[in-house]
Image 1: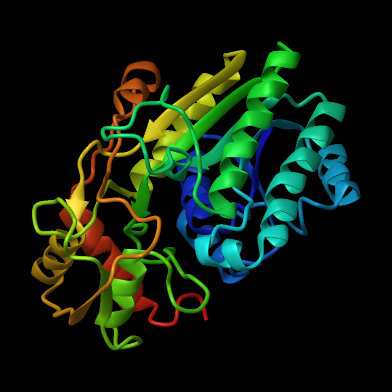
Image 2: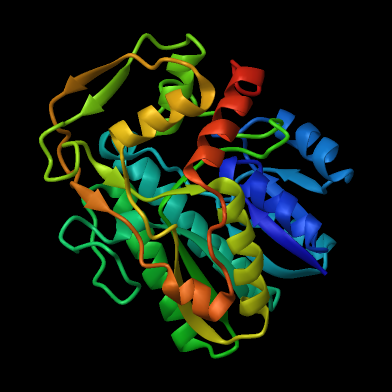
Length: 336
C-alpha cells in the first residue's frame, strides 16, 4: 500500500516524502515541475536510498490520474499540488481557480472512483484572513484577501463537504504557518522561481549575493520593533506533522483540522538578526511602505495537534537559520 503525494517534488512535499519513508511508508510522487525540479528526485534517492516511483503530469488530467490508481495500490493521498504565489494569483485569478480548485475536484473524483477515501490536505494559515486575533485556533472563521487564499478556503470547504456527504471519507486539513529551513543534509530546500515571495529565501539569496538587499515592508506595526510578526516553523518539523496526521487519518472518519506552527511569533528584524548571528553573514536591508493586506501579528495555537496527533515543533529558530543557509550556500542557484 502506497501514499500518493501530489506536488511531491515541491518544497514541502519533498521533505514529507523523506519523513514518510523514514517512518516506513511507501511513497509515490506526482508532479508537473511547474514549481519544482526533476533534480529533487535524484536528491531524494541520495537521502533515502530509494528510487521513489514518479509520474510527471497535472492533476487536471483525469486519465493520467486514473492510470496511476490503476497501476498502484494506493492507501491515501497527501495533496500538496497547487499554485501558491499570492501576487500572481491577483494578476491571474483564473489560472489559480482552475488549477487549485478544479485540480482538487478532479483528484477527489478519481479517488472516489477507486475507493481511496483518505486524504491529508495542504492548507494554509492564510485561511484565517486578516480579522482574527492571534493565537489562531482551528475553530475561528475563515476568509481570504486574494485569489490564492480563496482557493485554500474553497478547497477546505469542498473536502469538508465530501466527508459530510460520505462517512467513508477521512479528511485531514493541515493549516501551515510559515515553513522555513531545509533538510540537514543540505540536499533539498526551498528553491523559488524568480524573486522569492517568502522572507527567508529572500534573506538567503541576499546572503549568497544573488540579491542586493532585503526589502522589509513596514516598520510601524504595533509589534516589538515595528516589523511584522509571524510563526516560522522548520520544514522538517512540518513534514513530521504530516506523518502523524496521516497515521491519525488512516484510522479516522469525517474531517478534522490542525494548525502546524510553533505557537511563537518572531518579527522580521528578529529573523534577520538571528540569521546574521547564527551564520556570521551580514544582511543589508531597506525599509519600504507596508504592503496591502499584511497584518501586524500572526501565530498559531498548535495545542490541538499536540493533543490529538502527539505532534509538537522541536527545532529552534537557530536550527531554522542554520539549515536555511546550509541549503542556499551549497546550492546558490537552487536545483539548477
